[in-house]
Image (cartoon, rainbow, N blue to C red):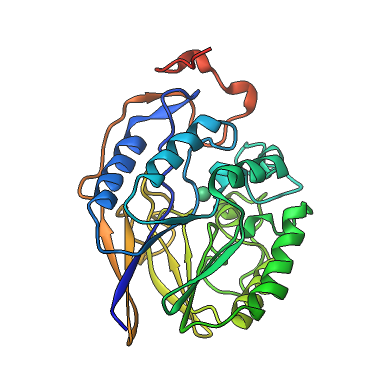
Length: 312
Ligand SMILES: [Fe+2]
């Protein structure tokens, strides 16, 4: 087999100057990454691991720009949503940060809007000797039709698909922070909120893991944390926590966490799949922008701040 390569990006979330909030830094960093991606000619495909937008969950215009940019790359891409695109992992109680977490739960409408731009998910296909799959595990526990579809896909469809030499799974949330059997992080505890926010709760976590094993998944790529860690192998599956592109996050969570922004290139040879981290050639330090950070309430969205007004 001729060696070949693929790329993975996540957490670009550039935002838009048409939005109720905007950070120049995030859009600068995405544009730097985008120029680097445009200059790479020798890859077969790109995996996009969610958070393509900052507020796509409420703005079609952010999806439109993201799609236009990704469509113009010189290779095909395959995208899954992240929580900034479609809403968060579900909770039935608000957490310790003052956010109204229940109102941030992903909705069917948001999930379907993402699919209307970037295609149905979950998805799975084979390229050369690798099966690539992608899904949005954050719907676990939501009770949405998307959850039933996800379990059916994970447990009935995926294991019966033809095998390839490798199976690469794209997720947005990490399945776990440290260990597969770590307890459910408590959204109501200040020092556990972030771990709750980043990972998938038991028992869904173990159920997903069992499905990954049955489908012979060999590599899992996740984003969301925006802090890269050396890959961690659990029962033969290599878990990558990938770098962010917009800005770093969670930098103090692990001693071996690396906040450098960038993305992975994977090279496939007869010997296996090897990774190379490609840092952004420049990280913006811009402080320009406006509006609130985090997850503001809908009534706190002030579009009169926007640098670019929406055409009426
Ligand atoms: Fe995210």
